[in-house]
Length: 171
Image 1 (cartoon, helix red, strand yellow):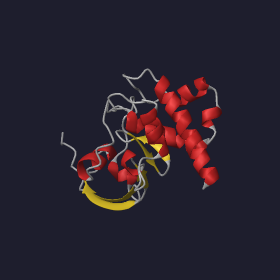
Image 2 (tube, helix red, strand yellow):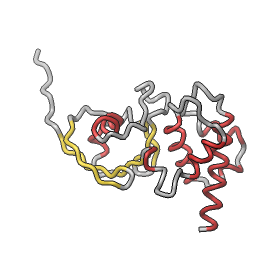
Image 3 (tube, rainbow, N blue to C red):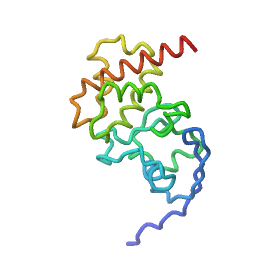
Image 4 (cartoon, one colour):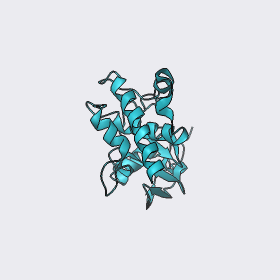
């Protein structure tokens, strides 16, 4: 019986938070590890490494994915958004401000995944803050938090959605 032959490294080109990046990676490298270890973007947290906790959630072409379940080579030619891409030169993103003001984080480990999941939800339904609280809780249920009890997170997402809608109407 022979052992499988290791595949050769591959070049991956991705756009991360608007910036082009290129890396030569082994085919088995996870997207989370590409972001954290190769590109130095440590805001993507690794919790369970089984896709259960949501701490590693990023947006891949605008869709939330668990970066611990995606190979880096699968992201070749695609656009990634991490938590580092939310804040701009003018300061924190309105959703980040809402999380801060509503004390929606304690240890902060789950926060990047919640922020990107919430941003995706708000982009899909700008009036999500007006929906039933149970619907919002269910929409966020793929992200686990062991500190906050979720109420402050729900409040922050509602407030962040309202802020983004107001900014869009004024802008």
